[in-house]
Amino acid sequence: MLESRAISVVKPQNTMSSQPIYKVVFFNQGQVYELYVRSVYQSELMGFLEVEEFVFDERSKMIVDPGEEKLKAEFSSVKRSYIPLHSVVRIDEVEKEGVCKVTDVKGGNVTHLPFPSMAPGPKKTD
Image 1 (cartoon, one colour):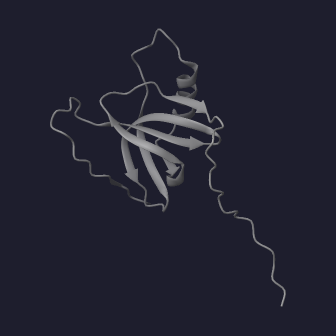
Image 2 (spheres, rainbow, N blue to C red):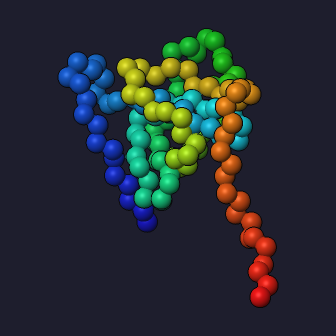
Image 3 (cartoon, rainbow, N blue to C red):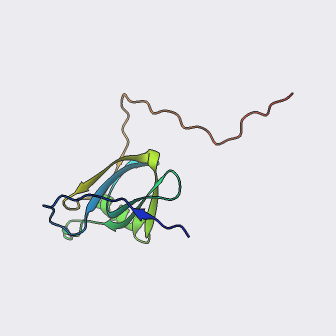
């Protein structure tokens, strides 16, 4: 079984909460996910980031956000998630959690580098 180690974070003395909250933004299947978690680790699986203890906004129980409800359902039975490092946009330590959301990637003037294909190449003949 793999064991993970927490990223050591130097916390400023003036933070209010006893446990930090991180906002993790990453790409997943043509969408940008924005999640709030309490634990972020560098995985022992090479090239992956581990996130766990998902935090969802419980303050607004009167107003239902369909995007956040979709994420709650998607991550309800997930103990720990492994995110490829090349998908991570940014990680911020925040004072309090916000609304988790999923947005579509809109076209822009930035072209992404192609990822290498995992398909076998042509066979060489001698």
